[in-house]
Amino acid sequence: MSRHQHRHSSEPADEAHRAPAECPVCGKELAITSLGCHGCGTQLVGEFARCEFCALSDAELDLLRVFLASRGNLKEVEKHLGVSYPTARLRLTSLLVSLGLSGDSADDSPLTREQVLSEVASGALTPVEGERIIASLPS
Image 1 (cartoon, one colour):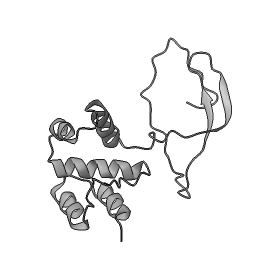
Image 2 (tube, one colour):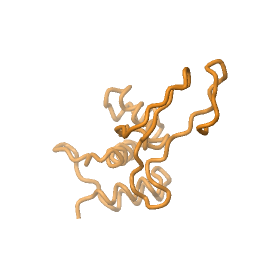
Image 3 (tube, one colour):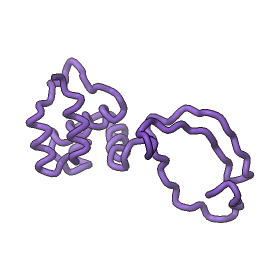
């Protein structure tokens, strides 16, 4: 909606579009600089903190919801998503990488590059997810 358009609160809301996280010109992180109220038209202008979950893909958000609903039980995540335990684990690792968390914990054996590539080859992980995981692996 442009600055000059005004939507009345009685009109149905359009399907919301996810805001891009990066500048399409230079690739740097975009800043949130305005907020608006659909009800009364109030506009707030400034620099606002970005939501760390807003840049996640739909698949990553779904995984996060399933993980939280299952209280962190990867066996339940595996059942809900209909994937193998290693695939569920790799997807969780990819999610942690997307959130800027290493995913390294004492009880978590390190993934190998070959495991990640195998999951990408089988279609269990997207190439982008695989690339993120591989980039986060220790050298």
